[in-house]
Length: 320
Image (cartoon, rainbow, N blue to C red; front, top):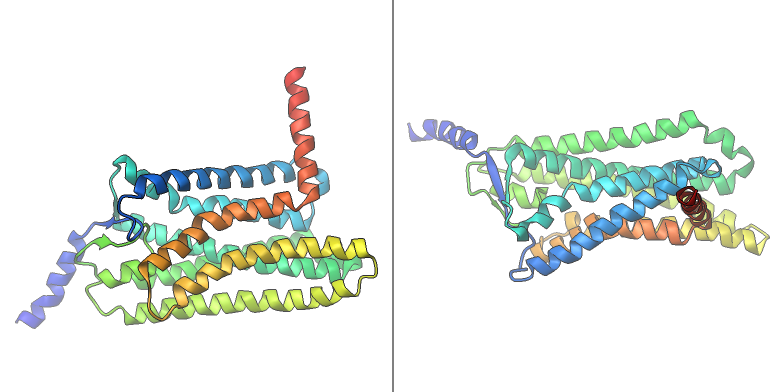
Protein backbone atom coordinates (compact mmCIF):
# COMPACT_ATOMS: atom_id res chain seq x y z
CA UNK A 1 0.00 0.00 0.00
CA UNK A 2 2.84 2.36 0.87
CA UNK A 3 4.57 1.70 -2.46
CA UNK A 4 1.31 2.42 -4.29
CA UNK A 5 0.73 5.67 -2.40
CA UNK A 6 4.29 6.98 -2.85
CA UNK A 7 3.82 8.24 -6.44
CA UNK A 8 0.68 10.11 -5.50
CA UNK A 9 2.42 11.69 -2.50
CA UNK A 10 5.30 12.74 -4.75
CA UNK A 11 2.93 14.30 -7.24
CA UNK A 12 1.08 16.02 -4.44
CA UNK A 13 4.33 17.42 -3.07
CA UNK A 14 5.33 18.39 -6.59
CA UNK A 15 2.18 20.44 -7.09
CA UNK A 16 2.70 22.14 -3.72
CA UNK A 17 6.25 23.23 -4.60
CA UNK A 18 5.63 26.46 -6.48
CA UNK A 19 8.94 28.26 -6.05
CA UNK A 20 12.69 27.88 -5.70
CA UNK A 21 15.06 29.92 -3.54
CA UNK A 22 18.17 31.12 -5.36
CA UNK A 23 21.02 31.26 -2.84
CA UNK A 24 23.32 33.34 -5.05
CA UNK A 25 26.96 32.84 -5.94
CA UNK A 26 28.44 29.99 -3.85
CA UNK A 27 31.05 30.79 -1.18
CA UNK A 28 30.69 34.58 -1.40
CA UNK A 29 29.23 35.33 2.03
CA UNK A 30 30.00 38.91 3.04
CA UNK A 31 30.92 39.93 -0.51
CA UNK A 32 27.44 40.20 -2.02
CA UNK A 33 27.17 43.99 -1.83
CA UNK A 34 30.59 44.57 -3.36
CA UNK A 35 29.98 41.99 -6.07
CA UNK A 36 26.59 43.51 -6.81
CA UNK A 37 28.18 46.93 -7.39
CA UNK A 38 30.86 45.45 -9.67
CA UNK A 39 28.39 43.38 -11.67
CA UNK A 40 25.97 46.30 -11.96
CA UNK A 41 28.71 48.40 -13.52
CA UNK A 42 29.68 45.61 -15.93
CA UNK A 43 26.04 44.97 -16.86
CA UNK A 44 25.32 48.63 -17.55
CA UNK A 45 28.56 48.94 -19.53
CA UNK A 46 27.52 45.89 -21.56
CA UNK A 47 24.13 47.40 -22.39
CA UNK A 48 25.67 50.77 -23.25
CA UNK A 49 28.48 49.31 -25.38
CA UNK A 50 26.19 47.12 -27.46
CA UNK A 51 23.64 49.93 -27.78
CA UNK A 52 26.41 52.14 -29.19
CA UNK A 53 27.23 49.49 -31.78
CA UNK A 54 23.60 49.44 -32.88
CA UNK A 55 23.62 53.24 -32.91
CA UNK A 56 26.59 53.14 -35.26
CA UNK A 57 25.17 50.48 -37.60
CA UNK A 58 21.49 51.38 -38.00
CA UNK A 59 21.74 54.97 -39.33
CA UNK A 60 24.85 54.40 -41.48
CA UNK A 61 24.05 53.19 -44.99
CA UNK A 62 27.69 52.22 -45.55
CA UNK A 63 27.37 49.63 -42.77
CA UNK A 64 24.24 48.02 -44.22
CA UNK A 65 26.18 44.92 -45.29
CA UNK A 66 25.84 41.26 -44.24
CA UNK A 67 28.82 41.53 -41.86
CA UNK A 68 27.29 44.42 -39.92
CA UNK A 69 23.82 42.90 -40.12
CA UNK A 70 25.17 39.90 -38.18
CA UNK A 71 27.17 42.16 -35.86
CA UNK A 72 24.02 44.12 -35.04
CA UNK A 73 22.20 40.89 -34.20
CA UNK A 74 25.14 39.82 -32.02
CA UNK A 75 24.83 43.11 -30.12
CA UNK A 76 21.12 42.41 -29.54
CA UNK A 77 21.98 38.93 -28.25
CA UNK A 78 24.65 40.42 -26.00
CA UNK A 79 22.06 42.72 -24.43
CA UNK A 80 19.39 40.05 -24.01
CA UNK A 81 21.62 37.19 -22.80
CA UNK A 82 22.88 38.81 -19.55
CA UNK A 83 19.41 40.26 -18.96
CA UNK A 84 18.10 36.73 -18.35
CA UNK A 85 20.11 36.32 -15.14
CA UNK A 86 21.57 39.69 -14.08
CA UNK A 87 18.60 41.80 -12.94
CA UNK A 88 17.43 39.35 -10.27
CA UNK A 89 20.97 38.56 -9.14
CA UNK A 90 21.80 42.25 -8.72
CA UNK A 91 18.72 42.84 -6.52
CA UNK A 92 19.65 40.28 -3.82
CA UNK A 93 21.81 42.60 -1.66
CA UNK A 94 19.06 45.25 -1.61
CA UNK A 95 16.77 42.90 0.34
CA UNK A 96 14.66 41.73 -2.59
CA UNK A 97 13.25 38.22 -2.33
CA UNK A 98 15.51 35.47 -3.64
CA UNK A 99 12.48 33.33 -4.50
CA UNK A 100 11.62 32.50 -8.08
CA UNK A 101 8.49 30.64 -9.17
CA UNK A 102 8.79 27.25 -10.83
CA UNK A 103 7.47 28.75 -14.06
CA UNK A 104 9.92 31.63 -13.73
CA UNK A 105 12.73 29.16 -13.15
CA UNK A 106 11.75 27.18 -16.25
CA UNK A 107 11.55 30.36 -18.33
CA UNK A 108 14.95 31.50 -17.08
CA UNK A 109 16.51 28.16 -18.02
CA UNK A 110 14.78 28.18 -21.42
CA UNK A 111 15.83 31.68 -22.44
CA UNK A 112 19.35 31.20 -21.09
CA UNK A 113 19.93 28.19 -23.34
CA UNK A 114 17.86 29.59 -26.20
CA UNK A 115 19.85 32.81 -26.44
CA UNK A 116 23.16 31.09 -25.68
CA UNK A 117 22.82 28.43 -28.37
CA UNK A 118 21.36 30.87 -30.92
CA UNK A 119 24.34 33.16 -30.34
CA UNK A 120 26.69 30.20 -30.78
CA UNK A 121 25.01 29.45 -34.10
CA UNK A 122 25.37 33.11 -35.06
CA UNK A 123 29.13 32.88 -34.46
CA UNK A 124 29.26 30.06 -37.01
CA UNK A 125 27.24 32.17 -39.46
CA UNK A 126 29.63 35.10 -38.96
CA UNK A 127 32.62 32.80 -39.58
CA UNK A 128 30.99 31.65 -42.83
CA UNK A 129 30.39 35.29 -43.77
CA UNK A 130 34.11 36.07 -43.33
CA UNK A 131 34.99 32.95 -45.33
CA UNK A 132 32.85 34.08 -48.27
CA UNK A 133 34.08 37.69 -48.05
CA UNK A 134 37.77 36.75 -48.12
CA UNK A 135 37.79 33.56 -50.21
CA UNK A 136 35.13 34.63 -52.75
CA UNK A 137 35.15 38.45 -52.73
CA UNK A 138 33.76 38.84 -56.26
CA UNK A 139 30.77 36.63 -55.46
CA UNK A 140 30.25 37.89 -51.90
CA UNK A 141 27.19 40.06 -52.52
CA UNK A 142 25.69 37.37 -54.74
CA UNK A 143 26.11 34.61 -52.11
CA UNK A 144 25.24 36.72 -49.07
CA UNK A 145 22.03 38.19 -50.44
CA UNK A 146 19.36 39.41 -48.00
CA UNK A 147 17.30 36.23 -48.44
CA UNK A 148 20.07 33.77 -47.49
CA UNK A 149 21.22 36.06 -44.64
CA UNK A 150 17.73 36.11 -43.12
CA UNK A 151 17.49 32.34 -43.65
CA UNK A 152 20.74 31.80 -41.73
CA UNK A 153 19.47 33.95 -38.87
CA UNK A 154 16.17 32.07 -38.78
CA UNK A 155 18.13 28.81 -38.66
CA UNK A 156 20.06 30.13 -35.64
CA UNK A 157 16.81 31.01 -33.85
CA UNK A 158 15.36 27.58 -34.70
CA UNK A 159 18.41 25.71 -33.40
CA UNK A 160 18.31 27.74 -30.20
CA UNK A 161 14.59 27.14 -29.70
CA UNK A 162 14.86 23.37 -30.24
CA UNK A 163 17.89 23.09 -27.97
CA UNK A 164 16.28 25.07 -25.15
CA UNK A 165 12.95 23.24 -25.49
CA UNK A 166 14.62 19.83 -25.16
CA UNK A 167 16.66 20.81 -22.10
CA UNK A 168 13.78 22.59 -20.36
CA UNK A 169 11.34 19.72 -21.04
CA UNK A 170 13.67 17.04 -19.67
CA UNK A 171 14.53 19.16 -16.62
CA UNK A 172 11.02 20.17 -15.58
CA UNK A 173 9.17 16.98 -16.40
CA UNK A 174 10.75 15.61 -13.19
CA UNK A 175 8.90 16.02 -9.87
CA UNK A 176 10.33 18.57 -7.42
CA UNK A 177 9.02 17.94 -3.92
CA UNK A 178 11.64 19.67 -1.80
CA UNK A 179 14.11 20.97 -0.78
CA UNK A 180 13.77 24.01 -3.01
CA UNK A 181 17.03 25.87 -2.25
CA UNK A 182 19.08 26.26 -5.44
CA UNK A 183 22.74 26.75 -4.50
CA UNK A 184 23.36 29.06 -7.45
CA UNK A 185 22.54 32.54 -8.72
CA UNK A 186 20.14 31.41 -11.46
CA UNK A 187 18.22 28.35 -12.60
CA UNK A 188 20.57 26.20 -14.62
CA UNK A 189 20.54 22.45 -15.18
CA UNK A 190 23.50 21.46 -12.92
CA UNK A 191 21.95 23.41 -10.03
CA UNK A 192 18.29 22.40 -10.45
CA UNK A 193 18.49 18.68 -11.31
CA UNK A 194 19.94 17.59 -7.93
CA UNK A 195 16.71 18.83 -6.30
CA UNK A 196 14.51 16.44 -8.28
CA UNK A 197 12.68 13.71 -6.35
CA UNK A 198 13.12 11.18 -9.16
CA UNK A 199 16.05 9.75 -11.05
CA UNK A 200 17.58 12.62 -13.04
CA UNK A 201 20.29 10.61 -14.83
CA UNK A 202 18.44 10.66 -18.18
CA UNK A 203 18.00 14.44 -18.03
CA UNK A 204 21.69 14.84 -17.14
CA UNK A 205 22.78 12.65 -20.05
CA UNK A 206 20.47 14.46 -22.48
CA UNK A 207 21.74 17.84 -21.28
CA UNK A 208 25.42 16.88 -21.54
CA UNK A 209 24.93 15.23 -24.94
CA UNK A 210 22.94 18.14 -26.32
CA UNK A 211 25.41 20.80 -25.15
CA UNK A 212 28.42 18.73 -26.27
CA UNK A 213 26.95 18.16 -29.73
CA UNK A 214 26.13 21.83 -30.28
CA UNK A 215 29.51 23.08 -29.03
CA UNK A 216 31.39 20.56 -31.21
CA UNK A 217 29.20 21.35 -34.23
CA UNK A 218 29.65 25.11 -33.84
CA UNK A 219 33.38 24.80 -33.16
CA UNK A 220 33.90 22.47 -36.14
CA UNK A 221 32.09 24.86 -38.49
CA UNK A 222 34.14 27.80 -37.21
CA UNK A 223 37.40 25.86 -37.58
CA UNK A 224 36.57 24.81 -41.16
CA UNK A 225 35.61 28.37 -42.14
CA UNK A 226 38.69 29.96 -40.59
CA UNK A 227 41.10 27.32 -41.89
CA UNK A 228 40.11 28.21 -45.44
CA UNK A 229 40.01 31.91 -44.53
CA UNK A 230 43.49 31.80 -43.00
CA UNK A 231 44.92 30.13 -46.10
CA UNK A 232 43.29 32.79 -48.28
CA UNK A 233 44.69 35.61 -46.08
CA UNK A 234 48.22 34.25 -46.43
CA UNK A 235 47.84 34.40 -50.22
CA UNK A 236 46.95 38.12 -50.19
CA UNK A 237 49.92 39.97 -51.66
CA UNK A 238 49.13 43.38 -50.18
CA UNK A 239 50.42 43.84 -46.63
CA UNK A 240 47.63 46.30 -45.90
CA UNK A 241 45.03 43.86 -47.22
CA UNK A 242 46.39 41.04 -45.06
CA UNK A 243 46.38 43.24 -41.97
CA UNK A 244 42.78 44.39 -42.56
CA UNK A 245 41.53 40.83 -43.13
CA UNK A 246 43.47 39.51 -40.14
CA UNK A 247 42.15 42.31 -37.88
CA UNK A 248 38.53 41.50 -38.73
CA UNK A 249 38.99 37.75 -38.27
CA UNK A 250 41.04 38.00 -35.07
CA UNK A 251 38.33 40.10 -33.42
CA UNK A 252 35.75 37.46 -34.28
CA UNK A 253 37.97 34.58 -33.10
CA UNK A 254 38.62 36.36 -29.79
CA UNK A 255 34.88 36.73 -29.22
CA UNK A 256 34.33 33.03 -30.04
CA UNK A 257 37.00 31.89 -27.55
CA UNK A 258 35.41 34.08 -24.84
CA UNK A 259 32.03 32.48 -25.57
CA UNK A 260 32.94 28.79 -25.99
CA UNK A 261 35.58 28.51 -23.26
CA UNK A 262 33.17 28.92 -20.31
CA UNK A 263 30.61 26.55 -21.87
CA UNK A 264 33.17 23.74 -22.14
CA UNK A 265 34.35 24.22 -18.55
CA UNK A 266 30.87 24.37 -16.98
CA UNK A 267 28.97 21.64 -18.81
CA UNK A 268 31.69 19.15 -19.70
CA UNK A 269 33.68 18.99 -16.45
CA UNK A 270 33.46 15.45 -14.96
CA UNK A 271 33.05 16.63 -11.33
CA UNK A 272 31.13 19.93 -11.00
CA UNK A 273 32.78 22.55 -8.79
CA UNK A 274 30.18 25.12 -7.61
CA UNK A 275 32.62 28.02 -7.17
CA UNK A 276 34.46 27.34 -10.43
CA UNK A 277 31.16 26.88 -12.25
CA UNK A 278 29.76 30.14 -10.88
CA UNK A 279 32.94 32.07 -11.72
CA UNK A 280 33.00 30.77 -15.28
CA UNK A 281 29.25 31.34 -15.72
CA UNK A 282 29.67 34.96 -14.63
CA UNK A 283 32.42 35.39 -17.20
CA UNK A 284 30.11 33.88 -19.82
CA UNK A 285 26.95 35.72 -18.74
CA UNK A 286 28.29 39.20 -18.01
CA UNK A 287 31.91 39.68 -18.98
CA UNK A 288 31.88 38.09 -22.48
CA UNK A 289 29.02 40.30 -23.78
CA UNK A 290 30.89 43.35 -22.45
CA UNK A 291 34.12 42.22 -24.14
CA UNK A 292 32.28 41.71 -27.43
CA UNK A 293 31.24 45.36 -27.47
CA UNK A 294 34.84 46.42 -26.79
CA UNK A 295 36.31 44.00 -29.35
CA UNK A 296 33.99 45.03 -32.16
CA UNK A 297 33.98 48.76 -31.45
CA UNK A 298 37.56 49.60 -30.48
CA UNK A 299 39.09 47.38 -33.19
CA UNK A 300 36.70 48.34 -35.98
CA UNK A 301 37.52 51.63 -37.68
CA UNK A 302 34.24 51.71 -39.62
CA UNK A 303 32.18 51.42 -36.44
CA UNK A 304 34.26 54.12 -34.74
CA UNK A 305 33.92 56.41 -37.75
CA UNK A 306 30.16 55.89 -37.85
CA UNK A 307 29.86 56.65 -34.14
CA UNK A 308 31.83 59.88 -34.58
CA UNK A 309 29.47 60.94 -37.38
CA UNK A 310 26.40 60.11 -35.27
CA UNK A 311 27.67 62.09 -32.27
CA UNK A 312 28.73 64.95 -34.53
CA UNK A 313 25.24 65.14 -36.02
CA UNK A 314 23.68 64.99 -32.54
CA UNK A 315 25.87 67.89 -31.36
CA UNK A 316 25.06 69.95 -34.46
CA UNK A 317 21.34 69.29 -34.00
CA UNK A 318 21.51 70.31 -30.35
CA UNK A 319 23.32 73.58 -31.19
CA UNK A 320 20.84 74.61 -33.88
